[in-house]
Length: 197
Length: 258
Image (tube, rainbow over all chains, first blue to last red; front, top):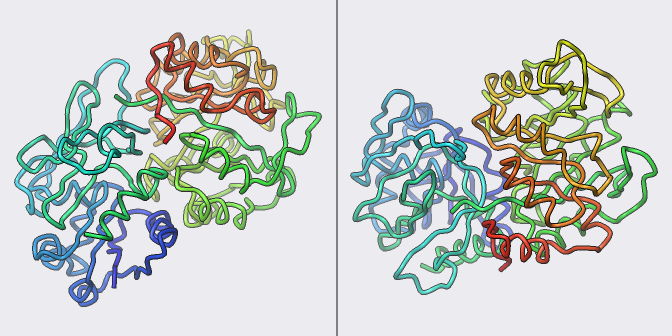
């Protein structure tokens, strides 16, 4: 069973509808036992890093999510669900996050002509991806913070003069800063690819 | 590079998409879900629906329509009209809309912006505004906010209102000009630019798009981040792909139509 982790970090309707469009049954849950038993785990999230971490702790999901992201099961982090996989975020004066990946999450600088949050469609560039769709196709982003580049970077994107990690793909652990569930046809193809991995 | 968004606007009256000039002479254009799918597949970057009769009829937004649209398309869309409190916003968002647009309601009750942003995140709360040129001394920008479909003048300065709304938590501002609305003679660039330069959040130009060069002007001259189109595509005079082709040729970054 594919589960979507519900830790009160934003609205899950679009994620559910995207999997429904692909004919994939999903269960939305905040029950650690169900997440542990799941064959595939989707970890979405919109909002602030600190409250997301607090919610995960309150629900007893911290270790469960870390495990799901590292034990070889297909895992998909989306937006804030990708950011908090990293070790630390500058958000809310600095928050230690899950630390599945060693990098830092930082706030976009204030640059004339570049609004923060970044809202809209931006290119994702990945060099070693079999699909044409990560060779510069645009995906839908909404975010004020970004994960720095590092050995974990699979897809990268440029905004406000900064190149950041827009996608991580380590075996079956995938994570994206953009919203595949709202990225039209290319987003659905990405989800389909993840369901096949 | 972040692309400039092209956003078709669908005015919905009694379950049908309609188009009028300056809110009058409405004609039937089609079914909202069918049109949403067609525009989404045609390359629209986002959609906005206004349930234009909801507030006048004192009824909530047509949630059935919002849910049907959400099931049918995989791009973001915003919904306005018929929202009177945070509970209404929540129903629209849970039905699958990415954003809720508030306009007259926010003028009457600015706290709705703060409450919505706290509850759902600033990215969900769009402030729509209807500024008109004004020599009211209370409006130093030269533009005054109107409400209720441009029928009431508020004495509020458009630029001051935009800044205040962002301080309260609005994540995006749609600047809709009555003088340009439905004319297809180009956006009102002056107020769009004043607001785009005054606030740190994305600004959407609205009202007056008739040809691709109007969008190019909104992006290049008024520094808008997105532009709303209606009549120029509803009539079939232009497709979104054609608009994007022209914008790309003018050096403006647009999302490719896959």
